[in-house]
Length: 181
Ligand code: FES
Image 1 (cartoon, rainbow, N blue to C red):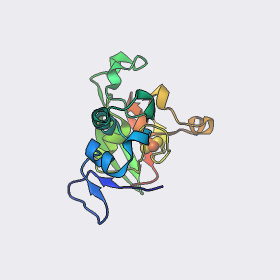
Image 2: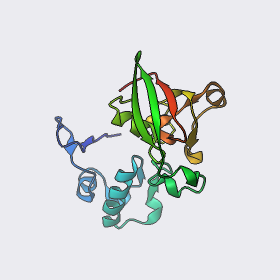
Image 3: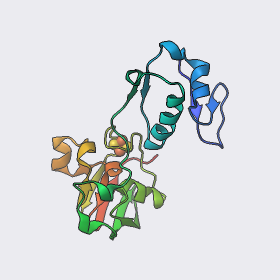
Image 4: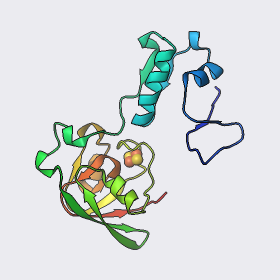
């Protein structure tokens, strides 16, 4: 196996790493395109970009596989999202490392995004309720959890743990974030 790191952050460059996005030219540079299959996993914006670049390689569809999860682009259009919540904002109180902070949170942004706006930066990886990195405690309030991205175990639900990356505020919230990035 050969791993090639491609750093999209313009302000960071590391020896031996490519920078920019994963373009068709970059793929050709490292892979035998004629004999390869491609498995794509990452955030939605990377999917959108790679879809165009892989199309340039003119591969049969069966040779490009996509992981089936990612951030929800517009939660207001999700059929299970409660329509009356659209346009509302709530008070989000967060306890982090023994201190607390407060921020306004829109019903249509994830709790994770609201926490990041407050400069609290909880740990996160997948941003789709799968990895558990952002797992936090819901002390008070109601949330909408994306059904397809509900990675909570039964014990999590019972004890009030949730994933801010796949949860949206439906009332004022109080949360405890155990880990920050
Ligand atoms: S970042 Fe993976 S579950 Fe939240």
